[in-house]
Length: 159
Image (cartoon, rainbow, N blue to C red; front, side):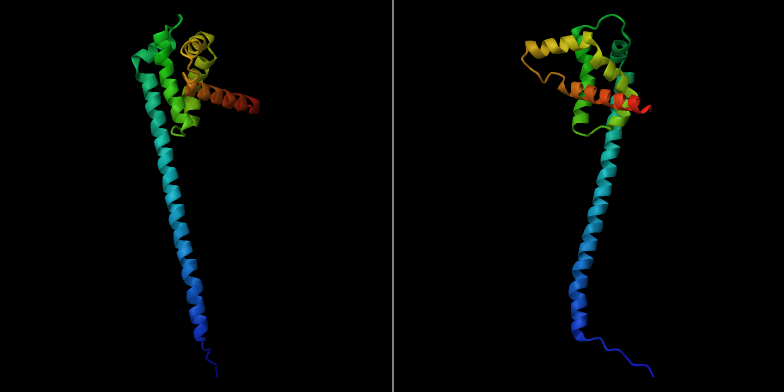
């Protein structure tokens, strides 16, 4: 004959006291994780959309296309227009609102070439000094320097 096991009442109360908080914590953790995953997915989508907007503007704007392929020196207005787009991309980069890997792959050469071009950097430096404004095109500068580091790392690794 089998003995029946009787669960003591204190055991039932104890398991309820322990089980309820554990279940609540597990539910909260799963909600938090789901929220983080959704937020990450939405941010990545926004970063790609931002990049796509910049890419489209850079490749489809006739004025920017003409400036990017111009052989003779750029005027100050052309430099402002050309670098204005890169400054905006740099601001989005600074705030982590654009996919910088896509920027590097698609627009990186143009941004790096512009940053390394002394005929473009000289007028930027002149405005910074003349206006006593060291922030003039600072996001473009940060982005250019960052992309150069990425390029140099990839070259060093043979990628």
